[in-house]
Image (tube, rainbow, N blue to C red; front, side, top):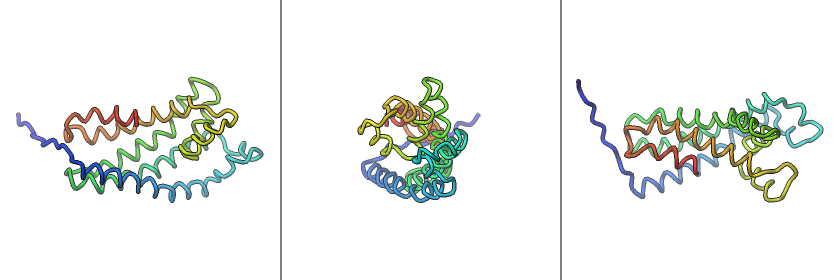
Length: 185
């Protein structure tokens, strides 16, 4: 039986600075496809109490998945541009990141099992963004809570970390830590 020897890399500071810059730029660019999803799906109705009932729970889940795909594609592509200089055959990074980000659309269903009302709040977090959720919590809006958002983001970090770990394993020394770091992050 032939053993495949894979060289495991230890990235330096330059790599991590480029990684942070790529993630930041990808995070900025995701507003373009997410904005398009908002327009196409009519998500502006979420903020209008008289019209918010027009958007069903399943439409919110679909919107959250599409927003996750949009975010995962821009961030994943930007990160891949940095990764391809360090590792060979990293094309699956974008796909893993898209799947990880798309999973955030399904995670509120889990949060909703733990407490009623969390589904709507967690979907608002995903569709409108983390900063929107945080601003509501800090401002003390009715029904604004740390718990559903924190649970959704923690589950999201674990799911994203897992899918990205599938690409990193065997290529990065102690790649399993990526799941833990993504969960905490």
